[in-house]
Image (cartoon, rainbow over all chains, first blue to last red; front, side):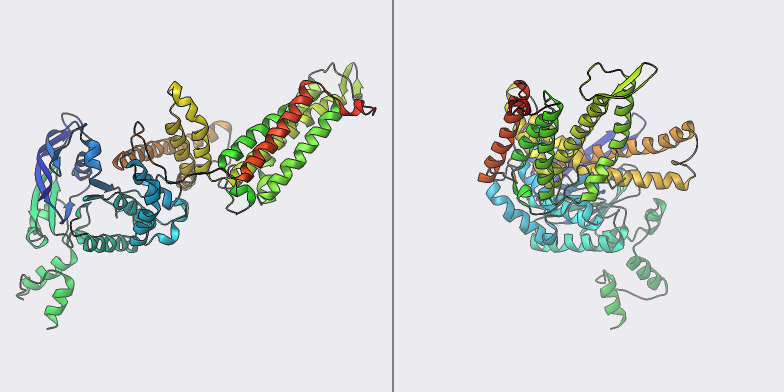
Length: 272
Length: 286
């Protein structure tokens, strides 16, 4: 089942500045997608369109079979959650618990159920000991965990991560990515669209969508996308370390089977 | 800049902290009104303001607010004290109860001027103490809820009570973030040679401009992003919301509310009827 259907999506700030130019794609339920592209390629504008923050677009977007429009916004937003780049600018509550509760209050979840939901998602995101902490007492990674907990507590079927790890240090970034993967294991129906310019993160995705100048230029599994070395280099996207190593070994005449898809399996293959 | 004491919450578990925010706000307003009601004579002023100062000091001590915080809040009052003294000494006063302080070449200054200045300063000190007692014992969010609760009846005239409360709550939430931003911009500009401390007036104003403009831009960006994040989490000011935090009045709340109301009524009656306890008892009064 497709959770997102985008057809001929075009959006322009001015007549000259076209940000999205006839974008069409679909996302399947339960998959982890990475949308990669360099700064200014239109990735975040696409996320805003999907969330209905931008409605003056051409083309059509439907989420969970519901066409996106001003009238269907509330219904669609109850299915979709988004985590933005800056952890400070999405922390609404004055404490961790209040922030997780914010979305629940908006969805009119009864008061009696809230504490249980808040504790459950704070536990899953490793923030249970910080429930009464104020944002100023948290690190960037912790604030981002709270944002994820707040979004997941609302029970979305699709989570959009709009460069959610780009302001974090490597440790914080890994923590968030591991958290996302463990949450996917718990809920296999959860679809994730991660918007990033980090190609390393993209190696862990089920599918990659490569964006440039408001258009999709490549789409497919990581091993299908990263073989297009020249095309990626032409839009200033490097290769992940695994693919750089793999191609370097292949250039030296080594035959590596297609089943080798990450560093661990490459290491096992080389040491066999 | 981060050492602003007024408005800071002190996380203790005292009986004042445990009171409902609505009760504390109610009592605060009543006490503030009581502090500002005039008394018929200086003796009565001294008696009532002294009694109020004792009550307010006990309340503040109960909140366990560090004395250094209170003193740092009161530090700024020195400017006000000097200003008031100058005004009262320069502006001639017709009332003469306490006697002449000095008279030079027809310029007469009465002790009343000093007493008047002292009375205003005492009122301001008590106002700050009451405000500190409220904010140091009440979380900003609870205070916001209390405001929303009091604004609720105004919904009949379409007053946006929930929106105002949400705005205040977000403003309070972003104070530390904006202070951090200010420090960051100041450091960034200082490293580029901007001097905020020294130089003439124009140079300092130019320095402040280089602080205010980036701060303004970053605040606008933050507000835009926060608005987007809130909207994406289904926030709609026109829609009803449930509430995570619920508040309940307890016996102690009624006792404190009654106590505050009794103080205000006592002061208001004394002030309104111009009662002078000292002359009633046959004691010479000023």
